[in-house]
Image (cartoon, rainbow, N blue to C red):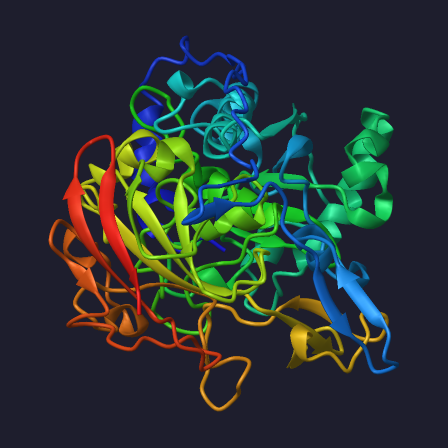
Length: 496
């Protein structure tokens, strides 16, 4: 679900303003998918730092003293066919289906049905120049360094049996969208006949990704996120995202804003929300596409989506990090790392307000924006895998074994919606550490330039002294930022 209301909810006044704008420039220009995969997943070492070409599988002993393996994040996520996701590398296809209603038809939109459909095409598969930021296709091509090409089609308008009035009913549950999904599948097959070509991996059991853009306005009340008239994604029962056309926030040049669509597509790829869905706080300080729907995907997301490999620091060293947004270069700190994305570790990422970060570092009149200055981001990741009873209740870490993936769903134990009193829910999945050693993000604080490490700043000397992982293991490492330029950030890392 998207939290960034400033981008996703437009007013009727804005839509009415667009009526007076010329519609002649609304044409679809398809994105060319021109990012070349440079493949940052090579195996190498220089004795002090190293990088793996491929992650290792997770290994544990089940209750029958047999060894079991989890080979990848995809396998973990799809355990027992409970959750579905698109493939995050290679060519992934999605259907985009515009939806209108008998009591809120698409001709009520400022540009009518055909041109509104064209705007949707630009939002998903169009050139960057046809958007205020990026299209879904251009964003993921760039963020993945060319490893993910999302393509598909935008269909004609589909009208379900559900009405706008039904969606406004306070008793209507958001899962009504799953019923619309099922109805749309039948409609699409009858109209186009190529439904099977959109199955993930050609397997109907792995889901068929559909993104619905509905004609009715989003509910801009405080209760909006709890109603069907909002933006969200289902990964169980169906593989579907659902967003109002009003959330495209057309500007006076008829350009669409795809921030919300990108955030929800991240869910279709298997990424979690990095803000708390059970409270008004964000462990990542709002500065993440999967938090406040801004900027590039950050290091942990790119690790589990199989776009990058971290550089493991094995000894004390002075090292120069290049900008993460353009190179995928990130350092991992954990002396006992299990060499997979599913573990507990520290990530050091050189943030720059460039590329996919640039626009959202210059935003005005918003609650949160990306830092305007380059600096070092320090993330604590706790993506340890574990067993889930009845598919949803965490009951143990995978490394401790004693259970089988045949009888228990496996998945990442922690999320950024923390709650005290339970070993498996009291720690966040992904937390941006604050330079001053504070913990304001866990009570609603928002990250800024001062949250990042700059020249002369240290970790483990005056703040974060004797830092421990959630597991109780000592980090045993300190560092100091020595120099920052536009091309690199140099820091000295010391093993205690």
